[in-house]
Amino acid sequence: MATIEWRSPASEMAVQQFDMAAAKLGLDANVAARLRRPDRAMIVSIPTRMDDGKVHVFTGYRVQHNDVLGPFKGGIRYHPEVNLGEVSALAMWMTWKCSLVGLPLGGAKGGVACDPAELSRQELQSMTRRYTAEILNFIGPEVDVPAPDMGTNEQVMAWIMDTYSQHKGHAVPEIVTGKPVAIGGTLGRREATGRGVVYMIIEAAKHLGIDLSSCTTAVQGFGNVGSVVAKELAAIGVKVIAVSDRSGGFYDAQGLPVERLLEEAADNNHSLEGCSYGEKITNQELLELNCDILVPAALEMQITKDNAARLQCRILAEGANGPTTLDADAVLKEKNVFLIPDVLANAGGVVVSYFEWVQDLQNFFWTEEEVNKKLRDILVKAFHEVLNMSQKQKVDMRLAALMIGIDRVARAMLWRGLYA
Ligand code: GLU
Image 1 (cartoon, rainbow, N blue to C red):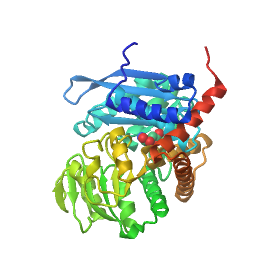
Image 2: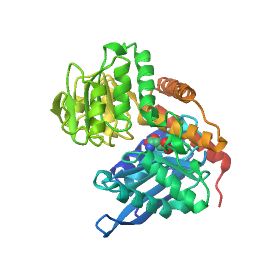
Image 3: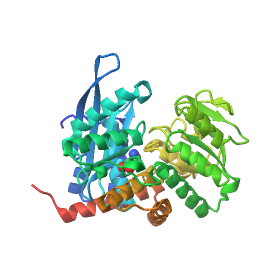
Image 4: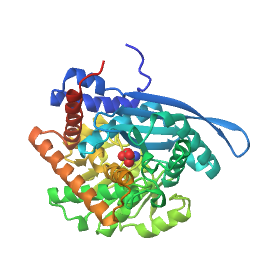
C-alpha cells in the first residue's frame, strides 16, 4: 500500500474513531473505504516578505475531507505544530460535525505552520493573503468556505475575504465566515463556539440532575472558546476554579474573577501570562483538578491513557477538537464521566458560520437574539439525538455522535453513487 502522507497521531485517531462507528453501523464497505481518507489535500508554499526584508517560506495546508452534503466547511489554524496529518483529522471531524447538527455542508480544515504571536501585523497580513492566493482556485462560496480556528480571528478572515474579492473584482463576503460584522459577518459568531459548549453543559446537567449553581469548572485554553465558556459559566453561577493558556494555568478553589481575568488578558495581548489571580499550575495539573465540569478548549490529545484515570470531573465537555484519545475514552467510560464529545460540544461555531453564510447569500441579516435562539434549538436537538442513540445502542456519547454524523453522510453518498 502506498504511503499515506496525511498519517499522524491525530489522523490515526480520527480514522480509528471512524472505524469503530462504521463497524457499529455496519457501514457499506465501499462507502467506508472512501470516507477513511480526504477527497483532496493541498500543501502550499507561502513565500512571505518579513519586516527585515528577507523572504520566509511558510508551509500551508487545506484538506477537503468530504462534500457530499454541501460545500466544504472548516477553519484555518495558525500554530507552530500544524501538519498535514493534524489538518486531515480536523477536516474529517468537520464532516461528522456538520452532518451531526444537520448542516448542508461538508468538512475541511486549513492551517499554516507558524507562530502568529511572533509575527508582526504586516507579516501576518502578507502571509494570509499569499496563503489565500495559493488556495484561491480551490475555495469559493459554493466550493469551500473557510473560517477561524486556533490562532486566527476576524481580522485574518477579513484579509482572506479582501484577497478573494480583489481577484473576483467585487466583494464576496460569503467566501469566509467569522468575519467582522462591518463586512458581512454575523452577530454572535465570535461567542458562538463557547456559547454552544455552555448550552450543551446545561443540557447535560439537566439530564444528570445536577444543579449547576453548586458546580465548579476548570477550563483549559483561554482563547475564543475557553474564555467565552469561562465567562458564560460564571454568569450562570458556576464557580470557575482554574483557567489556563499556553503560558500555564491559574487556580483558586474559591473561584477566579473571570471578568477581571478577561480584562487583564485583553491588556496583555490576550495572554494570561503574569496573571495576578490564583495560584500557578500547569496545563496538565488543571486537567486533574477536583471539579464538576472539565472543559478542554485547547489542543487535541490532552487527555490520554496516562492521565485519564486521575481526572475527577463528572462532565467532560470537549470545547477543543480531539482532546481525548481512544484509550482515555475507555478509562473515562469506566469512571462514568459524562462525555459531551467535540463534534457536539463545539459545533456552535460552525452552526453560526452556517447562519453567516446564509445571511450573506441572502443579503439579509438577523438579530443576535435570532442567531442565539436558532443556535440553541439546533444544538439541543442534536444533544437529545445523540443521547437517545447512546441509550438505544448502549454506546458512549462519542460513538453515538459519530454514528449519527457518519450515517447521514453515508446515506447521501449511496444516493449519489460513484462517478467513474
Ligand atoms: N474552526 C471551527 C471548528 O472547528 C469552526 C469552523 C467553521 O466555522 O467553519 O468547528
